[in-house]
Length: 309
Ligand code: NAP
Picture (spheres, rainbow, N blue to C red):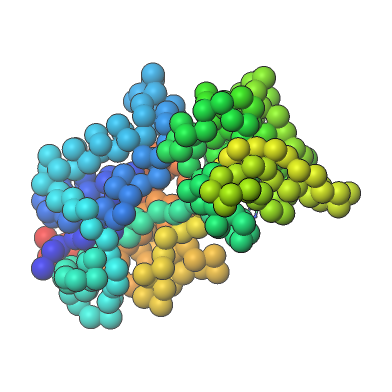
């Protein structure tokens, strides 16, 4: 039996791993299908304290992982495919094959990018439609692109994509960005960034079914439609929590986020949660790391009270 199993390996999971490892709890980290989490799809991280010159997302995560391993954490490139929190020790099915027993669990599975849900969009994912500019931007050299969304992600992705694209149009459903001032200014000052205000995508256009040739946009105020000719579409409309395996196992809110109980506890004593999977408000790498620390400390205390550890 493991004293602690941490599910997820973003800033929350790995910070929890550093703390529980330093408490000699020898945590097992199930890294999931995207080790390092969402930050590994981010290019430059400029707001994580301690890196005045910035650091790339993958580099930051590699350092956190190394730090956790240095104190005795085991990180495995495996996923939790089912959980049973009704008996103690808890049971975690891993990759659908093995079962790991755990005295306590820290859930830090984060969130994933959302798509519009249009049929034409779904068919073209990987063929001109993407939710990760840093992963796929390179493939769109010399093209005109569109980014849907009005938050920090949309602005960040659009600005990043101007490295490759000849023009990037931010398609936003309102006439005002949600993004922070500094990010907004960066996009507004970029001569390659344009805006399609009050606009929604009705259809992603293609000729061969293998590439994007344009977007059919609808003006939400006038109802008029027009075609925006672009060679690629990037989605930046937010994220959904990765809680599929925890449905009916711990209490979730109406949007699927884990419902916080006292401090980092969930509805199941001994199961804790940290980071974007529980955070509907801040969703920053640094806040996720802080929550990972809190979950580790709460978990440590809980184990101590149970005489484990
Ligand atoms: P977000 O702030 O929730 O913004 C999502 C955007 O997508 C909003 O503008 C929203 O429009 C739009 N949207 C949502 N659903 C849509 C739909 N179905 N169709 C069209 N548009 C839709 O998400 P985010 O930009 O991913 O940012 C999430 C968090 O991460 C924020 O706290 C943000 O500050 C943070 N973040 C920070 C940085 C940074 O500091 N470097 C970078 C990226 C993200 P409305 O505005 O009309 O609601």
